[in-house]
Structure formats: structure tokens, C-alpha cells
Length: 217
Length: 217
DNA sequence: TGCGTTGTATAACGCCGCTATGGGAAGCTG
DNA sequence: CAGCTTCCCATAGCGGCGTTATACAACGCA
Image 1 (cartoon, rainbow over the protein chains, first blue to last red):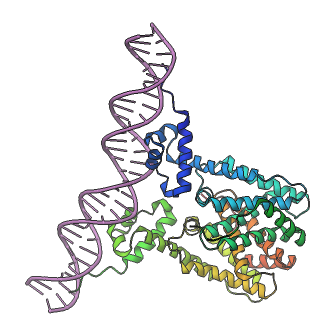
Image 2 (image 1 turned 180 degrees about the vertical axis):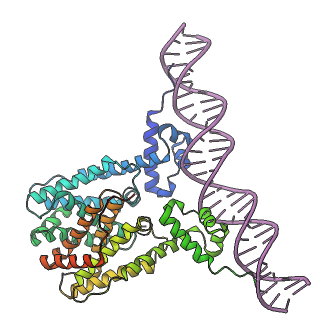
Image 3 (image 1 turned 30 degrees about the vertical axis):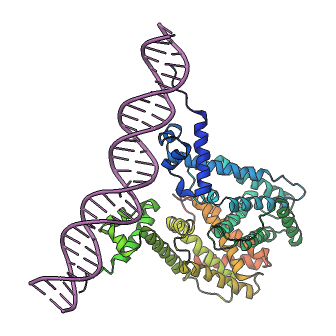
């Protein structure tokens, strides 16, 4: 008395196909019927492997955070120049948003399906750690979590303006840089040293150069 | 040969009812059928007075900006202390978001239906003007539009974190304050004078005190 | 009074998320 | 190797959505 075995690849296929649909066709394409058709199954599969479409969307959100975390993982801790490290994390954040706007919107601009979302908070913790090193090294003053919140808030605000086409890419990059500079120097950072570190970190990660079209589709 | 006259109040009633539905029941309540039922007409009215539901939503967005602009209008230009004026504008922004979270979400976190949205840009211009006065007065350095963008980005980021329940009200207010302080002082503002002006402006407008529940529903 | 014009109520179309149902595949049991 | 139990999933249906076609009712000028 053993039942028919579930397809171990089906759940993964649904999530990855949903993520692809989001990236390629935008959030409107994320319907149960279209997802099932794209995978080559019926809508019932969604209810066999998930509680409903909402859980699929939650998994897509997690997948987005996983990809973002993978990008952040490219940034190595730099005890010698923690402000440069923060600039690298910022560049990674910005690059992630510009490269995959649909994903960014879905992850950061919609109310999270899973309020816990430990994987999302993990990416924030990565920033808190970097900021804590900078504060310990005396690069600027503050409480790590709160200062990290402010870096994040600024980055998110600039990205949001960019994605709403209220800023072109060049303006967005400039504001992004200056906001980081303002926070560091505003809380005690040395102006010249801060500018040098931010430039160093940004160069290391490499923000996408604004060539050709400078507003998102 | 004169046809049946259109009801001059119908268009307004639809927009205002839609706004009320958004405020009281959230964005999911903004359906054609429910809106028509609430107004006491049929769904066809939406197509008689608008091109479709999208145009209604666009008008709701404009209405939200109009209410926000009315709040900003309470802030009088203060040539003697432009940084206090910026703090007042910030407090108005924050209050607007906290008081009407559904409206804030709808206006600032969803892609605008009408990309022009001159009324929305008008509210931003109000900030640019205040920032320009501060720069002219030597309170900090920069180009008005870009610096205003950065204030806006920071405010929006903090509000977003608050509405996502990742910050409680007290944390949000603190980050809000410190971000403004950081931008001013980071670009040349005198620390003590900036802190005093920000406190003065905030006191004048009055950010809602965090009493009782400190996270949005 | 009649006619032309136009608002709008009703019903229908094709979507949506979701569920009820039933057939068939799978593997343990005798 | 049958048989039976179990569960996957294809099909079809339900109530919702935005939108559209149609028919009727209201209105003002001739």
C-alpha cells in the first residue's frame, strides 16, 4: 500500500518557471493557468505541491532573495577598508535592481507573502555586519543596525525613483553615491577618506555603466 | 435633439467612493463591480465616465497626491530657517504615510497609471524649492534637485520599511530624523545648527507620537 | 407629440484562483 | 503475479474579475 510517488522535480520546476515568467513577462504573467501550461501540467499541480498560488509567489520571493544573496556573496569582507566594502554591497544592491527590475519590484515593493522571510533578513544582516565593522574601525559613528537601515532606506528610495523612470541611470547612480557619502560624513566620517573608500569599493564591484538607454523599459 | 444629460456628480462620486474604498478596505476592494455597487449604479457607469477601471485608479492616485499636497500646503516657507522648513515637509510626508498607509502604498509603491502626473511632480517641486532656499542660505551644499531627490529617497525608504513592519514607529522616526541630519551635515551643514533646526521644524509640524501599537496593521 | 440621442441596467465573454471529481499510475501485500 | 490501496493530475465547474454588446428608458428639441 504505497501511493504514486510525487515528481521530485515538479515543485522546483514550478518555482523556477514562475521566476522565469516574472523576469521575462512581468508580474501579470504569474497566473496559475499560465504557469501550469508553461510547465506542461495542469493547475492542480500547483495545489498538490503548494497550498495555492500565494505560496508559489512566496517561493519566488525567496528565490529572488537567494539570487540577491548570491550577488552579495561576491563581496568579501574587507577589514582594512570597511567603507569600501559598504560601497561594494551598495553596488551589488543597485546592480541587482537594474539587472532584474521585475524581480526587484516583486521582492522589495510588494508586501511579503511570508512575513518571516529569514533569507531576506539574512541579506540585511550582511549589511549590518559590514556597517558594524566600519563603525568599529571608526569610519563613522552610530548603532550598526540603525545606520544599516538608513543605508538601505536610501538605496531603496533611489532605486524606486529609477524604476519609476523619475531618474535616469546616471542621476540614480550619482544620488546613490552621494547618499552613501552623506550618511558616512554626516556621522563623523572624514570627507576625503570616505570619498576615496566609496570610489574604491564601487570600482571593485562595478556598477553597470550607463550606456545607451538610461531609463528602464 | 438633445440626449439624456450625464450626471455631473457621478464622475466625482466614483472617484471619491473609490478613494474611500481604498482607505477603508484596502486595494483589493477597488473592483469595478464593488465600486459600482457602492455608488449605487452599474459597472457601465465606469465606462461612461472613464475609459475603464485603470483611469479610475489613475484619478484615485491624483486624489491621493492632492491630499498630500494639501498637507504640504500647511508648511509655510521659512526664509529664516530653511532647514526647519525641510524638517516640516519631512514630518508632513511621514504623517501622510502613517495616517493613510493604503493611500501611500497605492501612490508611491505602485507604478503610476499616468506617467505624467503633474500633480505628483508638484509635491516634489515643493521640496526642491525648500531645499534650494537652504542651499542658498548656506545650510549645506549641493544642487537643489539632486539633494531633494536624496531627502525623498531616504524618507521613502524609511516609510517603506515601516509599512512592511520591519521597523516599529519609534525606530522609523529615529531613522527618519537621522537620515535628514546625515544628509545636511554630510554636505557641509553645521552639526549643532542642523540638529536645532530639524528639531524646531519637526516640533512645528508634529510627527504623530508613538503611543500604543507601534506597527501598522 | 414624436424623434433622436445618450445614459445605464442586464447579460454575456474570456480571463482569474480555486475545488470537486474521477481515471490511471505506482508499489506494497497476499 | 494478481489485487488493492493510495495518491498524482487532467478535466470540468464555481464564483469572481474587467470589459463589451445589447436593449431599454429618459430626456430635450422639432
